[in-house]
Length: 260
Ligand SMILES: C[S@@+](CC[C@H](N)C(=O)[O-])C[C@H]1O[C@@H](n2cnc3c(N)ncnc32)[C@H](O)[C@@H]1O
Image (cartoon, rainbow, N blue to C red):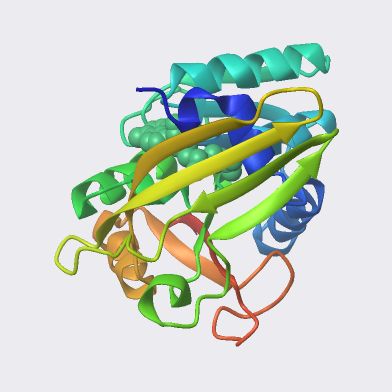
């Protein structure tokens, strides 16, 4: 069965509600703010990059960018999109819990809750260890996760359903249904994903998938960082501005880490 990650074009369309350029602005601003040198990142590694929209935006700005993903279709798509845009992008097909690129970066990022694909504490700690090994002495790791409010309260900060419209193609996306409850012991939910794509003069296309999601709390993240011992927390944000994680308006959990 093919799913949403087998169709990187559709996945990218589904996620086009994001302002990737503004997010990259924030990522660069945080490197200036939190690196001891105060220098903007010149080398970036995006982990679990999927279509690598952020890595491509970094490359567009002249930053040396590498995108890593486990899925061959995502890697091929990221590579093709970069080439078509005339961008230098190194794409590697690797696992974010075991990669060893033999290079260090000013900035490593994992966007859009991709660590929800790490199902166990051991795999999360292995991921942090591998990431730390790829940071330069003044490097930062920025990890964007869902706000814990989304799964811990009845008052989520984001909706699981949305619509997007890009270049005359419209899509209605549902990422998770009310019945997709977390298993209270494993903190894993099987999120049911449905994407309905409509375009004038083309038949409607429906993609259905079930994507396992592991929910990580803020305190578990702190514990995983301590358990790793290779990283320490520098700052946390509740969005790509300066909203605090504890602010009622916070809608993401974004953590800035550096080598311990
Ligand atoms: C929700 S998508 C996010 C993609 C991208 N970060 C973004 O912001 O659009 C999650 C991605 O994680 C990748 N992935 C899942 N497990 C992985 C692993 N162990 N190592 C590397 N990539 C992984 C999937 O192939 C998929 O492309």
